[in-house]
Image (tube, rainbow, N blue to C red; front, side):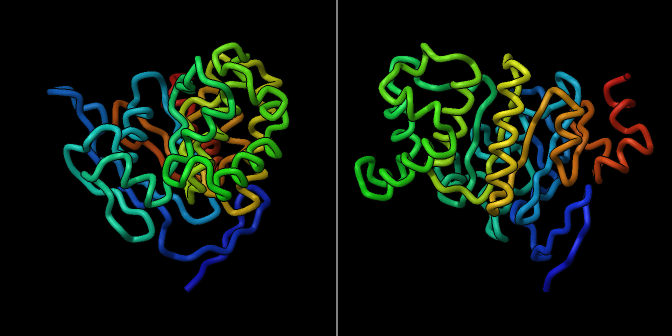
Length: 252
C-alpha cells in the first residue's frame, strides 16, 4: 500500500512502512542519559532533519541509531528488520551510512584510499569498488582532481565532500549526515547541499543534522526538534514555523 504526500511543493509516493523506524530509544554515556525515548521515522525517499540546540542529543541519537553507541533501550529497524544492539557493521550491511561530525577522514591517506576504505564491504580492488570510486568523482569532480592528494591537506569543504563520498561507497539506502556545515564556507555548504538534493532525487533517503536551521528547513520534508534529549516537535517545516517550535527550542 502506498501514500502520496505533498511537502514543500514536492509530491512523493512512498511505501507505508518506514525505511528507518526508531522507537523509544535511550542512549547513555555511563550514568548520563543523553537521549530519552527517541522515536522517529524516515520514509523511503525523504530528507528528514534533526534539529535542536547544542547538547540536545542530536549526535548521540545518530550514534545510537548506527550502533556506534549501544542503546540502553528501545529499538532501531531498517525495512522492518531490527538492528539495535548488533553494532555498526550490522547497520552498514542493513543499508545505513554515517557521515560523522567533524568528517573524520584519514588525513595521511590519499583521497582514493579514503574512498576505498569506505567500500570495505566489497573487495577494495573489485570492479564494483572501481565503479563506486568513479561515481564519487562524478558527484564531486574536485575529489577526482585530488585523488592522489593527502586528505588532511584539503580544505574543510573538500574533506566533507570526501566524507560523504566515502559513506556512499557502501551503496546505502539511508545516509546520516552529522553537522553538515560545521566549519565550512557558505559556498561549500551550498555545493554539498545541491549534491545531496541530487542524491535524494535519485532515491537516497537522508537524515540530516544541520546547525543552520534555515538551510535544514529549506531541504527537509519533515523535521524533528530535540530538546534536552527528547523530541519536542515532529512535523513539516511549515508546521514548525507556524507554531514557533524551532524558535521555542532555540530560545530565539
